[in-house]
Amino acid sequence: MPSDTLTITDNRTGKQYEVPIRDGAIHATDLRQIKVNEDDGMVSYDPGFMNTASCQSKITYIDGDKGILRYRGYPIEQLAEKSTYLETAYLILHGELPTKAQLDEWTYHITHHSILHENIKKLINGFHHDAHPMGILVSTVGALSTFYPDAKRIFDPASRKAQTYRLISKMPTLAAFAYRHSVGMPYAYPDNDLSYTGNFLNMLFKMTELKYKPDPVLEKALDVLFILHADHEQNCSTNAMRGVGSSHSDPYSAVAAAAAALYGPLHGGANEAVIRMLKQIGSKDKVAEFVKKVKGGEGRLMGFGHRVYKNYDPRAKIIKQIAGMVFQVKGRNPLLDIALELERIALEDDYFIKRKLYPNVDFYSGLIYQSIGFPMDMFPVLFAIPRTSGWMAQWEEMLLDADQKIARPRQIYKGPQLRDYLAMDQRK
Image 1 (spheres, rainbow, N blue to C red):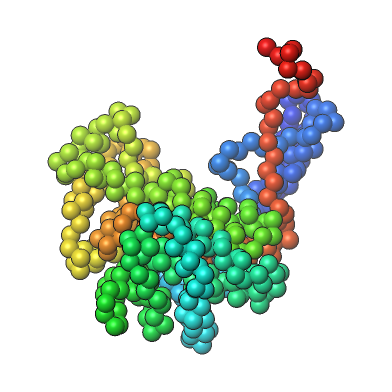
Image 2 (cartoon, rainbow, N blue to C red):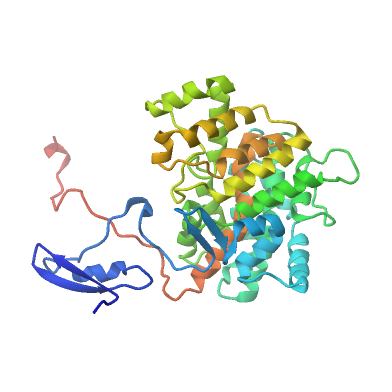
């Protein structure tokens, strides 16, 4: 009779072990019983968590082979078409789509927590004029923990709710202030009459006009991009959020750690790498030559392939449509023809098909951001703003999960065994 167990035979000792299977997984601690002597039992070795589940989650579902992404069960395609970022953020954090009354209350609190303490401006002013906006964001969001000491009450639901309002609301303000500082412009304050993304555009690009009016197409495009980036399962920055949060630090410190992980070029800087690649190619007629070099081991094809997706990234399909909307308003990005030709060749070439290298979310997002007017330094910042809702949902889920403990991976020690200390004159 079949049973939900895994039978393991240790060929070193001839012993057999029955390990329970739960939700298609075995618990790593069940491997400890497998041992040759009384020292520590067996551990699993998995650099980069290639096949290790660090948690159970109800937030985001991904089927990489089929190109599926869902938030709380809702397909990303439906949310991008019908929802708004703030409604999607509510869904991610609360598990259900809001009623009109719930959404109105949620929107009110997010809107009215966007002002920063004036001392945060002093902190930003202390950065060098050409400081990277992401470096400023990491520093200032971490500093917020000193302005809200009540954030340490992480097991108080009311406190968690307050910090969630503050973080989701203040991240665009921090990001916009970091941008304005980097270009030497005075800060533009939040406008509570505008939408979440409309207000962000206001704080970024307002000049001398009394009332900034965001272009509705750009406002919508940015809102959809924020929906697509709101959460993405246990990626590097989310893992950092959960890892730091597992020590029961305040959420501002944990978000700063997550943003620092996102700062890396392999995570939040990937779309910047795409822009640099397209500029390097230079023109549409040089794409074939570039692809040939990539196949020969010279250089990398940025924006293609994904650790999870082995099919066309569902977010990339949506972003490609949004790009067309933006280019109608801002003009056609001269790099678009190179990108389209690169995608066409790669999707028809057996080399890339066999390796399941399909366009991912970063392939077109950088083109959109660039067309809207964002410098490349702002790309990871634009990633961090919407991902804050996902980070906070993952953080709270981790806190309330009875199975979770402080993150403390094991290691396989490969260093010297016991040896005696040598005096200086005895060392070679």
